[in-house]
Image (cartoon, rainbow, N blue to C red; front, side):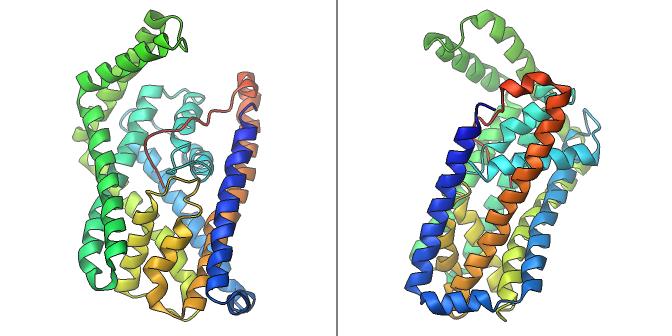
Length: 351
């Protein structure tokens, strides 16, 4: 596993950033008071938040099954394993971007063509980015009274970047000439810097996958029911992540309301532009910035610590153990995997 040191570096970086910011927030809002709220917090709410956070991966897996269905039928179990390893790497890389390349690679080991799996994953990303953009714009209007000039600007920036990713994916998926021209240009650049030695050999293979990708992407127009199902799964996945935070706050008697719900949504959309592994160091500050007015600041700070434990530190540990187990399983089938562990970054973000 040549990439293991880099994985460890990402984990250490995200942990240090997150813990430093959490420590600063606790200290600024009364360390001993915040600590006492954490110590006295009811355990059933923590377990419920973890359950809600993990259940969203079932919807992620279901959306993958639906996205691949026009070209290939896969089992729910394979989709769940793909979701596990995808999100493990997403949590370790900036912009939640490292999981998509591995998902494509992992699916090819189950005899699913790279062009087909790429189209399916990008279609999921396309719908997810569209949903985030729409929710961000709606949240900016609905929560205008709860937003400061800073939070409003940050939210609009997050919505703009998510919208930009939507148009980029759409253009590449629907415009075959643009996709071919871009891939050809990238190959030429790789040849010039001598990372690729035989351009013609690679060009034939890669362009074949690009054609396959565009053909698969175009087919989704003939399956509106599948697009609707992917959209519903994406909404459920996003809302469950928000509700995991709502469950934690409920343990402090901070009850869920529409303004709180949309501020949680606004917080998550804004955090999507933080360029650190797992958004560590940024999402903690954004959490306080968006939610500080919904209860005593020491309880909000304690809720932040507990929420990050449930949805990041505990989750990344559990997903890491599961990913190692999955890796060992596929290494038995494909011994060549012992020489490579793909964690290259992608330009997309998938939850």
